[in-house]
Picture 1 (cartoon, rainbow, N blue to C red):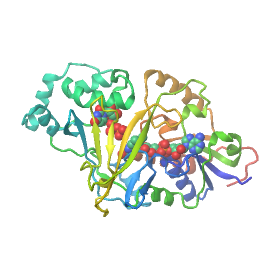
Picture 2: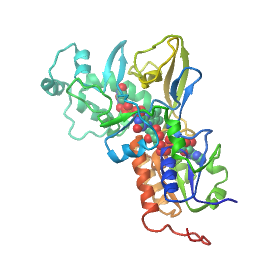
Picture 3: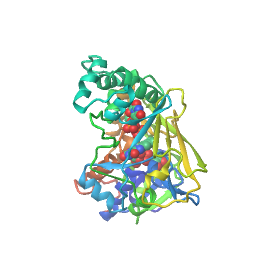
Picture 4: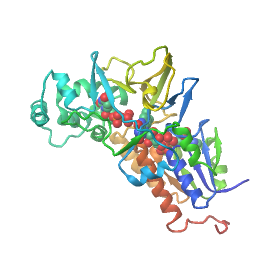
Length: 383
Ligand code: FAD
Ligand code: UDP
């Protein structure tokens, strides 16, 4: 049996960055991946003959203000100059997200100035001293009307539950702006890899053995024996421990893709749908993510996103209060596994964006590779 210093479970961003860093330090690495492609949820591909790069698991925009992370990812790909803007449709009218001066003025038919916004919103806000859940937090930020229009229905669809059951911090991902600035992210560095995400992963994984269609749990003991030093696990945390403490709550996503015979279907890359009775949460049109590419005018690709529960394909950690207790119990079990490194969105059960995953994988690699020598397993030779 061939052995490696590290066996990395999952070829998403956490696994790929850790593997790349380990290779750079002269360690041997095997990545095993359950799916039939690398890249985790960032995986993208060119759709048929269209030159349109489709993000198979939803539109992914790389954004960060951390120069070190930005420099690191640029080693593996060139990024285009795309800046993300999101629109939302509510009762047949289109508004800009996140909520900004333009959204408020369009919604109320006003012409408020930046300095007038705070006191205007104040009138509709409830005085909630310490908001305990997503609904209270949102109302304390934008008031009941805007919450009801743009947040309540969308959030209910996305998370499959009443927003009063959700943690407040989900909504603090979105800023509320008193200007017309309508970029979705405030970060200094943003873009999409010009060739799509998959070539970026291919470059990261150069010199690394990769086995696709390989599920860690199909032969766990064998993969563990193949790892001379450690297993690096980026799958779901509860699954690793056979759900001993129960199942953490996850949300999943389903996509419906169609090719449409028009040059431009919706005029933008992502259109959210705020109404509760529209079954999907958003519609993606990936053509708009690459202003630097040329496309044939006769067609475009459109993808509807639906949210659902699917424990076999977990995407989003939900973080109900009961999950927090369960998570602490799993973290305690994880701390007693000296030969496994847990990382990424699924193994940490954290709502990480890509730049956060890159930073945490680099930190994990630094701690492992340039810190104290790794604990040796019995019979392991010098490295
Ligand atoms: P993943 O990408 O999930 O990779 C984990 C990998 O492990 C998967 O390939 C999985 O198949 C594999 N695996 C799991 N279990 C096993 C097993 N038992 N055996 C073998 N392999 C296994 N972030 C941004 O910064 N910008 C965005 O615009 C953005 N948009 C998003 C949109 C959506 C719809 C979603 C769901 C996420 C979005 N994200 C975005 C977040 C981004 O996808 C994550 O931060 C990142 O992909 C997480 O990387 P990861 O390696 O932790 O996990
Ligand atoms: N959200 C909303 N309306 C929108 C967009 C977002 O209510 O039009 C809320 C929703 O609860 C969502 C959260 O804000 O889960 C964070 O949005 P984000 O776009 O960051 O979600 P993601 O890209 O991770 O799906």
